[in-house]
Amino acid sequence: MITIIRNVDVYKPEHAGIKDVLLLDGKIASISDNISVELNGHVNVLEIDAQGKKLVPGFVDSHVHILGGGGEGGFSTRTPEATLTSLTTAGVTTVVGCLGTDGVARDMVSLLAKARGLDEEGITTYIYTGSYRIPVKTITGEVMKDIMVVDKIIGVGEIAISDHRSSQASFEEFVRCVSDARVGGMLSGKSGIVDIHLGDGQRKIDYIKRAVKETEIPITQFLPTHINRSPELFEECVLYAKEGGYVDFTGSDDPDFWEETDGEVRFSKGLKRLIQEGVSHDNFTLSSDGQGSMPIFNKKKEYVGIGIGKSTCLIKAIKECVYRENIPLETALRAVTSNPARILKLKTKGRIEAEMDADLLILDENLDIDTVIAKGKVMVEHKIPVVLGTFEEKR
Image 1 (cartoon, rainbow, N blue to C red):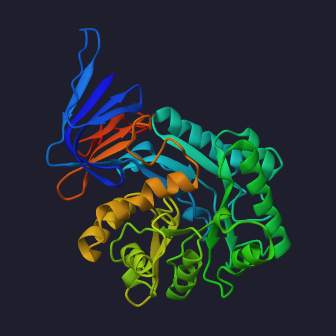
Image 2 (image 1 turned 45 degrees about the vertical axis):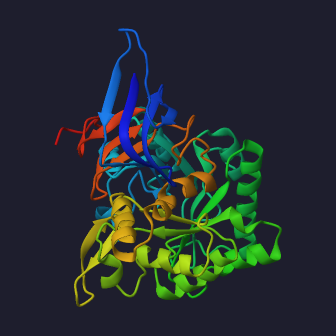
C-alpha cells in the first residue's frame, strides 16, 4: 500500500509548511512540495487530501499502565487494561508500558505479553522492567540482563522515591539499580533510562541529586515523572532541568484538574515557566500516566470516587499550550514526539522525516485529532477508529 497525504501543513515537529508526504511500506518515503508517482495498475494508492489541516508526528506516551494500575484502595480499585483504541484515538502510536505500586498481582511477564498484544494490533510498544520497588523484580532475574536480552525492555521503571508506597530503598540500593540500567543500555544500544515516580514526600528528588553529585552516573540517566505533583516539587525540578536534567510532566484528562486540586501545576503553565527559565527545549516530556488510578475529590476535598488516567490528556495539554499560554505548537509538540523518542533512543520515532516510521497524526483546524496513522496504516479516520483491538466492539 502506498499512501500520499496532500496539501498538509507539516510540523516535524519544527514547522515545515505545506507539503505532500509519501508513505511506503510503513515508512515515510518522501516529503516534498508536490509528489507525483507513476504506478502500474497492480498497486493500491490511498490519497488523503488534508488541505487546511496539520500533520504532526504520532505521540510517544512514555508512561502508561497498559496492564492497568491502581489497587491501593483494595482489589475493587484495580483499573482496567488499556485497549488499542483508547490509545489510537488519543493519537498515541508508540507507548511505553510500566507497572506501578502493584508488582505482585501484575508481573513483568504479563506486562510483556500485553505489550506484544498491542504491537500485533497495530501500534509500537516498549516496556520498563520493574515496578515501584527496589530490588527490582525482573523477567530474567537481573536488570542488566532484562535490558540486554528482552527486545521490548528499554529501561527500568516506575521506581518510586519520596513516596510512602515505595520500598524505602537505601541510597546505595538505588544507585546500584541505576548503574545496572545504564550499563545494560550501553551494552544493548538502548537508553537504559530510569523512569522515576516522584511522590509528595519531603525528600523530593534528593536521591537523584545525590547520585549525580556523588557518582559518575550522568544526569541524563534519569527521567523523573509527576514533576507537577506540587508547586514545591515543581520548583525543585525547574532547577534540576536548568542543570541539564530531563523532566516528565503528567497530564490530566480533566483540563481543570491541576487548578482544582491542591496547587498542582498544569502542563501548559509549567512548560511556559521552563521556557522562561531558559531550560533546553530538548529536556521536557509529557506522559499521561494512562490507566493509572486517579482519586476524585469534591470541592470540600472529600473523596468521592476513583478515576483513570487517559492518554487523551496529551492532545488537550498541547491545545492548552497553544490557546491559553501562546506557546508555539512546534515547541509544545516536542514534549510528546521528538523529545521522548530521543531520550528513550527510539531512533525511528517522533519526527516527520524520510526513513522514519510512518506514525502520523492529522489535526483539524481546532487541533483536534482527525486521522491517526501507525506503521503506515490508517487506524483512526475522521475521528472514528477503523482498526479495533481483538476484543473491541464497534462504537
